[in-house]
Amino acid sequence: MYTIAALYHFTRFADPAAIKPALLDCCLAGDVKGSLLLANEGVNGTIAGPRRGIDAVLAHLRALPGCADLDWKEATSQTPPFNKMKVRLKREIVTMGQPDVDPRARVGHYVRPEDWNDLIQQDDVAVIDTRNDYEVAIGTFKGAIDPKTQSFGEFPAWWEENKHRFHNKRIAMFCTGGIRCEKSTNFLLGQGVEDVYHLKGGILQYLEDIPQDQSTWDGECFVFDARVSVGHGLQEGPHMLCYGCRRPILPEDRGNPAFEMGVSCHHCVNETSEDDKNRFRERQKQIHLAQQRQA
Image 1 (cartoon, rainbow, N blue to C red):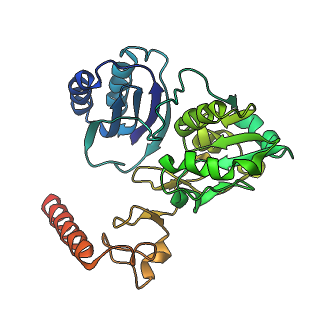
Image 2 (tube, rainbow, N blue to C red; image 1 turned 180 degrees about the horizontal axis):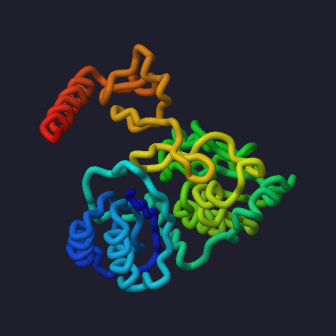
C-alpha cells in the first residue's frame, strides 16, 4: 500500500535552490516519488511512497523555515501513483502571475466542509470553481460557475470581464486541495470584494468528510497522480489519462476512433500536428520497451 500526501504551504524561502538538494535526497532515500515545487513563496506538491518514507519527507519539510505548521492531505493507493521523483524550482508554487497577491497577508474566510452546503445554497452567494476547464468537466458542485479557464493565470482576466455579474454577492470559491483559493481569495480582497469565502481543505476534504447522501458534489474530482480521479470517500474513480493532452477520459472513450494509446483522444486529436503525434508514438514505443524489459 502506497501513502499519498498532497501538500502546500506558503512561507518565505530566501533561497529555494539551497533547499532543493537535501529535500531531493530525503525523498530518494525513502523511496518517495512524485513532484514538489519550491519557490520564494513556499512549497507545493504531491508525493507517494511507503509510510516510513513519507513520514521522513514530511518531517524534513516541517523543519524548513516557517513550515512547522505545514498541513497535508493523505490518501492511499495499491499501485504506485508516480514513476519518478522531481523537485523543481519555480517562480510560484501555483502560477497566477499576480506579483501583488500574497496569501500570507490575508485570505478569505475558511469554510469547513460540514458548513459548505449551507453557505453555497444561500441566494446571495455565488459559487466559483477556480480549477481548469478539463477538471471541471468531470465534476463540480451543483450550481457552481465554471470560468472555463485553461490555466489559473487566466482567472484575473476572467474576473475583470465578469465582476459585474457579482454585484452585491458574496463569493464562495473552491479548488482541489485549497491552494488556488489561497491566492484567488487574496486577489478578490485586493479587488475590493468584501465577503469572500473558500472551502477549507478543498474538494478532497469535502469528499472525505461529507457522506454521499448529504453531498452537493456531482461527478468525480480530478487528481494529479495515477489515480486520475476520486469520488466520495476518496475512492478511485473510473477515469484514465490521455497522455497526448493530459486530460481525463473514461474507459469507454478508448473505443472512440480518435483514441490512440499515448498519442490522442477525442479531446485532442485535432489539436496536435502529425509531427506531434509521431513524437508521441515514439515516446509510447519507448515506454512499451521499458515495460517489457522490466517484466
